Length: 425
Ligand SMILES: *Cc1c(COP(=O)(O)O)cnc(C)c1O
Image 1 (tube, rainbow, N blue to C red):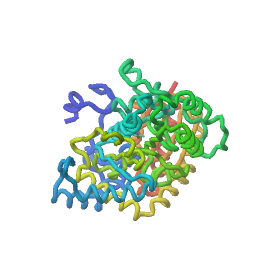
Image 2: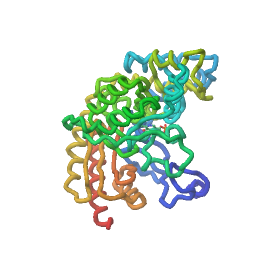
Image 3: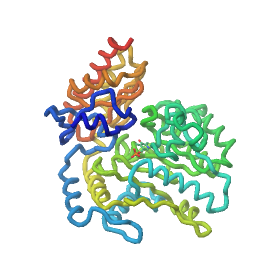
Image 4: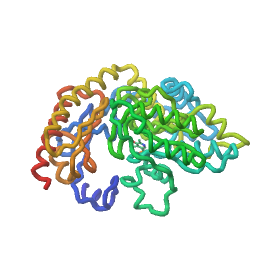
């Protein structure tokens, strides 16, 4: 079976015939993945930020089964259903009150495309055809589709592979202030210069609030975000917040923008929206933005086949309810303090450049690039699933992880990084 996979099935950012070994997952329950050889390993990645309640959750299984018995899918053009309505009510009630409209799509990247369309159409419909660019921070990540790629970090992102094809946007220096660093205006200087000089051609700023994910796992001061909001308002530029990774409690707030006490014009959510059960994302926006988009008889031009898929909406509803009825703040805080203590120990390793923690996110940045083919079996041998990239070994476990299970994860990271010192020359 694995031979067929190897020869025919493509995997994320991997060669057609991968060099590294592929592990087969038979089932998953709680924080454990069960491999085909019966071994159980702790998932430190929450399947890329999404599985916040763990796997095989009775409440989510029940919601899926109930929805299946009604209908798994129905087109959203001209038709609607209870699952979409209930989920929208819930999402709009937990996000900023200025957000009143919601667009469902099937993946985070598509929700970003929709956000970009909203921003461009907002100005275009009102007769301003000059605003054709997006301003974003370096080291950001917003997805793999073309619009999303064009706002990802121009160096570590995928720009080189699509030279001459991607829409040319404007980038400023990545955030240089850590989460609790004292504020200095210099931190916003480059952003300020870019927006001052180019605001006539900038429709929107897109940013991952407080935590930059796949572009470099950097955590920055909410005060920077506050200044970004002020400058966007001052220069008539829309602010898109990409909470696809940070949303639903991951950083210790339900949404990371709450740290900055600001509101976005457009908000993208995805990943943990369905508790990692199904692919669903959403783009939320204000009345002001939708009215702008619809000026002069225009309408938002997007409509995916699986828009607001009832099965995904039903599970998302159950997931949000489960989250809100759980002591998630205490859980995330307790994971945070354990990560600070246990991952903090990695600082004594000479290969370690920095350890960063916020909420249920722990990052160990190394001085040199990791070796995935060497590291993965080392983690598996220690009973954990950790998927590092570049020079970053990081985890964002399910919120339901126990103290002992988390210690298994952090100990594995310490040991594997320590052992890597001997291998990495
Ligand atoms: C994962 C991610 C995306 C893309 O979401 P997909 O569902 O993979 O398309 C966009 N933005 C951020 C911040 C992400 O973490």
